Structure formats: structure tokens, C-alpha cells
Length: 112
Image (tube, rainbow, N blue to C red; front, side, top):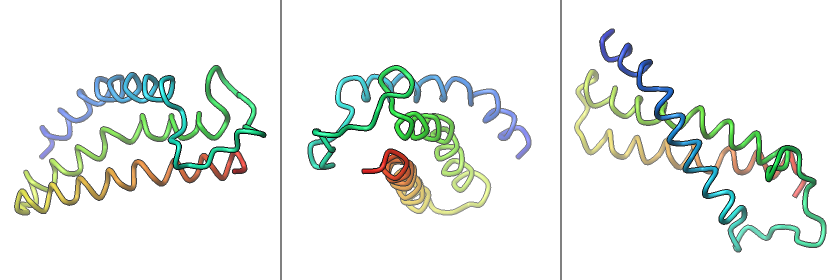
């Protein structure tokens, strides 16, 4: 178990880098989905580069927690002996939380 934790710690910076690159490209290409009802007439002010304050906080939370969702799912499968399907469902549920919780937090911070 400690070896697994050691591997996770060693791989964490790489996964953070991958998540940061992917989410930055996604934000630069399409910062808002058309179904989000973004306030076009009064957008939130930019805080750091292309990010508003809420978007920046969302970005940081998502980048730092993405590897943890995968490590938790792998831990469930390897050490707790749950069936692989349950681990996949747990990973999917964690990804849903990973995607929507920071997004709603960003909207609240930006006031829309």
C-alpha cells in the first residue's frame, strides 16, 4: 500500500501538468458553453490573463484535484478489492463532482 502511495506522489506533478495544459487549452478555445447563459452584456472582469477571479479559482481547484480522482478509483480497485465496475462508477461520480462543483463555485464568485 505504501508503494502505491509513493507512486501516486511521484506521478502527481505529471498529472497536474497534463490537467493544467488540457484545461488551459479548453478555456482558451471555449471559455463558456453556450448553454451556460453567460452574461454577455456585463461579463465578469478579467483577473489574471484570460481568467476572471472565479475562473482562476475553478482552474486551480480542477488542476490540483484531477489526479486525486484517478488515484482514489485505482485505490478502490487495487486495495479494497471492489469489483472493477464499481471503481469505474466511483471514478465517473468523482469526475462529475470534479467538473460541476468548481464550475458552480466560479459562477458564484463571479456573480452570475
